[in-house]
Length: 264
Image 1 (spheres, rainbow, N blue to C red):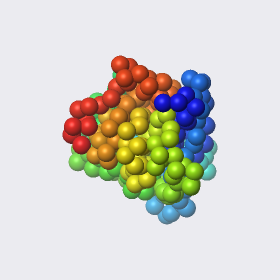
Image 2: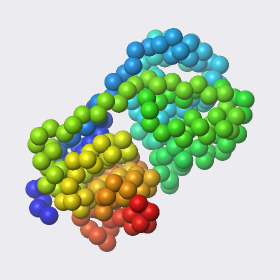
Image 3: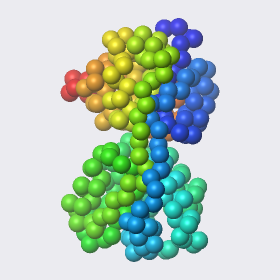
Image 4: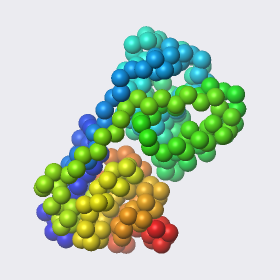
């Protein structure tokens, strides 16, 4: 594959810049696709009530960096000083870093040697038995229901707030041509919704190119969509994804999830 072919990244919003920089540091050219836009939702009475009642919640679980930004914006309006006694949780390191940056709070995350997934977060001992506790889940519209369903099944008094909406966009003509021709070094995806959205423009040529994913769950989904070479990064951070891009060109180094391909 030509060294001049770009790496395609799909991370929405301003967080794409850090990912592009990390991949470019390995010497690769980056082209940013914009298949998804994150749009904050107007504040509803239910949101306002939850923000005002923040001190009544024992735990706050945040699913994404953008959800963390929306939460921080809201709390800045209502809580000049955050209440004590509230524990914060994040699905991944980037979400935790966003919470810490904006709110200055300590954040519980999945173990560093595991994946940044809802399953890994739910395995934390402090979330195993939340019966009777008020738990606030801050997320976007739609998405996976695993966190909400599991916490509720464990007895938590759960409040789920959708604070933003995902709006999918078709690829530009140039990006569509790249996908149809498989004219790229690797495609980097850390969202199942984005993966399913882009798959409709991926021809046989694209399905045979390296696909960098941030978890084995996404590798399974990739296999179901027909991608033959999903390479699993050690996480969803820019450093982890960039390292996986660098490994993708070396079959002996790339962690291609053949088991998940067989499942798909």
